[in-house]
Image (cartoon, rainbow over all chains, first blue to last red; front, side, top):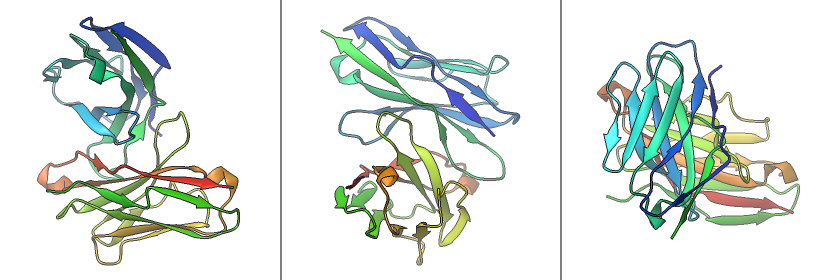
Length: 116
Length: 116
């Protein structure tokens, strides 16, 4: 079974600084998708960024970028120029690409605090 | 258009009562997912549908949990004889169609169930 591990229960960053959240995963599949979701205190889960495993290029979305290391099964999220609105729980998630269930497998999350 | 909606947003049940949680997916979304999120944890998969077919129910914790999506749109998650360990936030998500290469899941705000 696939597993996702987020080793940092909490992180903090100063406003305008850069922070990196870690995620590792375990799978025997060669093709899959990886995601970072943000969950503010209001609870609605929002997709931040996604990465297809077959793509070597790291995904970027404005201030958010990932460092995808397929061989190491690592998928970290970098947030640049942190803003107060970035404060939230961040979840890393995995989904197989071909066949079988479309379910997401989530890590336990990292709580990000942004200090003014 | 409108996002995923869930009702009720909050539900308090006495131990032993039955509850029904409703999810309205985004119009036209083929796949619908249910997740359970315990306090301070990442969401855990319960079950999912493709149209009206329940393709994976491997995450349902016991036979007290039952989900249906009879017309391939609205879904109901029913929990019979609720127990305290059922207290959690129940998240619903929907996605368009894997065959179209659409695999992002869009989440609703969740239903917070408290069993007393």
